[in-house]
Each structure stands twice: as C-alpha cells, then as structure tokens.
Image (cartoon, rainbow, N blue to C red; front, top):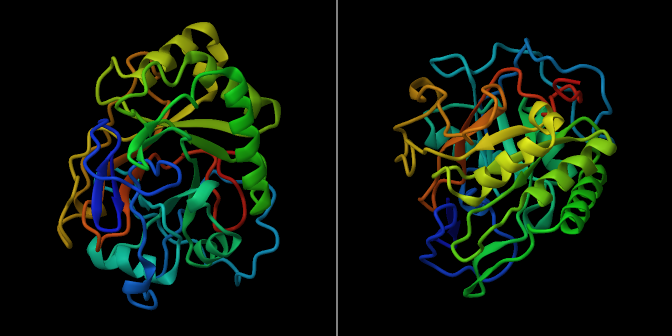
Length: 325
C-alpha cells in the first residue's frame, strides 16, 4: 500500500519503504486529507441505496446533523457494486468536493474511515456523512508501522492478549463516537517489510472472539498480494481452527489495484473494473465485502477508491441504522 505524508510517498502494503513518516499509526495506504487546500463546500447530494438491508439499531447519538436525505438510487459500478472511497483524513465538505473533482463528479455511496488513533473519525464527520446520504465503514489502525521514525515497528499483531486489548480499545473508540453494536470493525493488517509471522492465527482468532462476545462484527483489511504473505497464512490457519470464524468474518481486500495513481478525471464509478479482489485461498467466495482497487499517490487527491457488495454488513447507514442487523 502507499501512504501520502506531506507530499511524500511511503510504500506500506508491499513492504517497501521509500520515505519516512514522523509518527503515529500506519494508515494502511489511505490518503491523508489536506482539507485546507480544497474548495470550501460540496454541491452534489449523496446517493443512498434504497435496497440497503439496514434495520433498526442504535443511532449515532449526540450529533448535530439535520435529517438524513431521502433515499436515492445507489451509485453503482458497471457490474452492480456500490462505489465509494476511504481516507485517513476527515469527511468534510472540502474532502467531498475533492472526491467529486477527482473522480468525475461522483459522490461516494460509502466512505471508509479510521475509528481510532491519530486519524480517528469524529461525531461531526459521521453527522456530515449522514446529512449527505453517505454510508460509513470503520477501520481500526494497525499498531505495526512501516518506517515510523525511520524504523519498522513490529511485534503488535502476535498474541491473543494483544488482540483482546486492541479489540476492546476499538470498541471503546467506536462507542465514544456513538456507533452501536452490530457494526463491523475492520482491523487493518499491514504487510510490513521486517515484521515476520504477523499477524498470527492466535491474534486473528482472539480479535474475532473478543468482538463476538460483545456483539460487534469482525472484519479484516488485509494484503494478499501473494498467498504466502503473513495475513493469508494466518487467516487460513484461523479458518482451520474455528469453523465459525469462516462464517462470521468479512474481508476488505487491497489487491490488485488497477487504478493505482489514476490521474484526475480519468476514473470513477462509470469505469470501475469488475469486482475481482485477490483473497486468501481458503476464504469463502462471499467473505469479501469491500475491495480497495485504487490508491492516491498524488498529494492533491485525498482519497483511495473502493467497491463494496450492495449487502455489505456493518456499515453506518444515513438513517442511523447499521446495515445487515
């Protein structure tokens, strides 16, 4: 994966560090928004899928948003998937205008944001997304980090105790911004160049069991550039140990990336590729719900681009419901 930091590019997902970031968690290749340089407001209303399976669940309390926009036909790719973006930076009118300017006027159906850490989502962002009819999915940052302060930080994705602590902190952060149980928390698992045998199957299973016991849902954002990478190996080991893991866990994949570094105005939902992410060899066909198929490598582009299956569970819907619950 590639991370934009102050106009520099850091390779993360392939484990190739080409620049140094100063501090903070690995952002998983998601573009960091420099919101002060974008237009001040967005003009295109968001699209809301009228076919969403979301039902009654806890609303985002404490927000100051106006009423959600009426449901509109979903924004679909040529093969019928939802189209959206993800970012490290906040969801704001400037960031939305940047998306619309870069991706040929498209307003995303959904937006991926970090729920904790230096880039954690706020109640105000969630309220803004709801007011624009944008669904939100939540990512949990990886404590391992590629080239933080000039070194690879490893050793955080190994033990069951680490996983339980990470999962509880993610739940706490989600509850702090008003997210209800039933949402999917996608744990970011990066392939760091010097971090070997991470994650372990023990880590993935403990993360999953901790969330399951508290009625949250487990997702993993992982790199399967090669099947011998640590994430697919650990995932398949976890599948072999716990059949329920296979049935419950959903995936957000980041390979391949046919729209990596797509220039302004050249891509968007109209010409998105068919939904064909690379997944662990043992993963069920239906496990992958989101595919990050393109990344920003330009400091003027704030977001990476995604596709999602229309029934993707655990997203925060504009009406306050959580999809699939």
